[in-house]
Amino acid sequence: MRPGRSVECGEAYCCLCLGTRILGRDESPFYTRVRMDIEGQIEYWRTSSAEDLAAAESLIEKEHLRHGLFFAHLALEKMLKAHVVRVTRDAPPRIHNLVRLARLAGLKPTDEQERFLRRFDLYQLEGPYPDVRQVVLDPGLARRELQKATEIWQWLKTQLSVQ
Image (tube, rainbow, N blue to C red):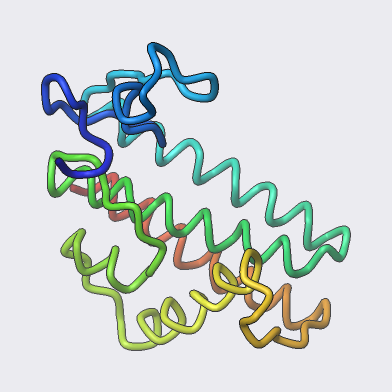
């Protein structure tokens, strides 16, 4: 069984829970499985991505730089997952690697965009893992990183509308 699949019927679910049977309980105290069609999943990833980008902007404005860039990474990740769903017609894999997600989605970022995505993965790792070398951030660098992430996010949003 693939993560994100129902034990009973094999349909894709848009949630973090594999189902209550795996937990050995009748009901999960934390998650409710929600069936979504493909367009519903795409809309979930797109909307959630926009919310995360807005949160990133707000956090960086308040100089919570590390958290802001973590949310900017999350915004790109979710927009890429919308593309993956559109192409595969299935729930996206639970990975965070932006370049890998772009490839799974069949996107063709420029060399510059791909280098940025590869480097930007650092901000996903830096948040939850204290043993990863921390980047020294200043507000100017964080704003430049957010600006570039926003440009790529806009490109991804446009590409999603074209498909």
